Image (tube, rainbow, N blue to C red; front, side, top):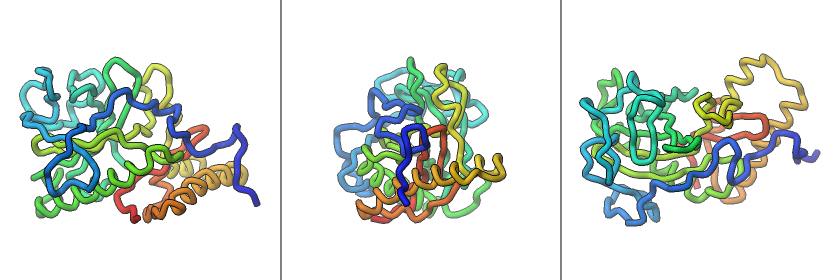
Length: 258
């Protein structure tokens, strides 16, 4: 049986997905870091800014509390980092592997381009966590570095979210990814049809055989391409996939093995 799909069916996302236009400027710094904890062949930026929300080469920041406060985050709250307006907190379907990693929608200023910022807060076990901060920090770094290292090799791979930079500021480590979170903040409606596949199946209760085969063949084509590159995701499930009318995205690359 052929697993190919017609142009009108759901298929894996192209390298420049229509729902997440490529950013015009990467946050990656061309100067390699000397930190021994960084992954090989990956550049990242460390600044002396007093807060993640105070962008380099800019005097614009937030007033008062210099921590990411979810209660203050919206797309009209005036909170910036670099070229991005930081928006609401994202609640991943499967949560995050450590409590001090949080995800936020952010918008590239002056455009309708959105990203997701994965933020690791160092020295903080996360809300309500009384555990070992050093353990959480080390595990969080390892997971983000692993995700970045793999996604850096898959920038042209259909069906995979793409990374747009990695940097450190003070006690924050930040990975910038495609936004595949459904929302209505953009004027063109590029993101409104995005839905986590687990939520979609629960909402639909059952799928027609043809639709299920289209979704499965799209995901299978991406997985097959990864295996040909000796990459194993190791955490494939409905909650780690996002669907829109044409594409299936595979998310959560913390546990990938090469």
